[in-house]
Length: 83
Image (cartoon, rainbow, N blue to C red; front, top):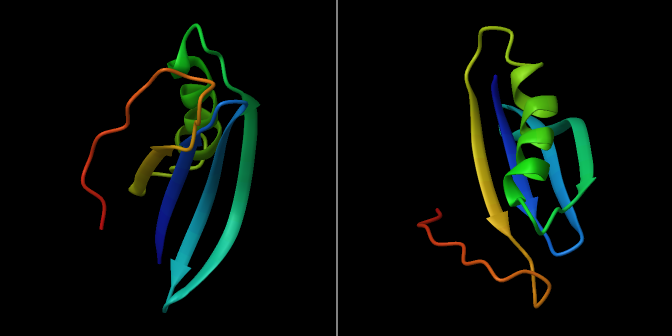
């Protein structure tokens, strides 16, 4: 079994989901939404991250993916290579 977290920083909310992958099937284990702080984007990101990853790690590795769906509300750039 593999676990992964996906976190999206949006203009209004930072949203995250913890998934468990088992034999090609994904199950939702937990979700977390918090308001996005334009003063410090890390604030919402790390609140979601802490809830979904650090409290659930149970000595197992969890892959973390993140993105930004902000349109107009934030002046940020998300740069990276995704599969």
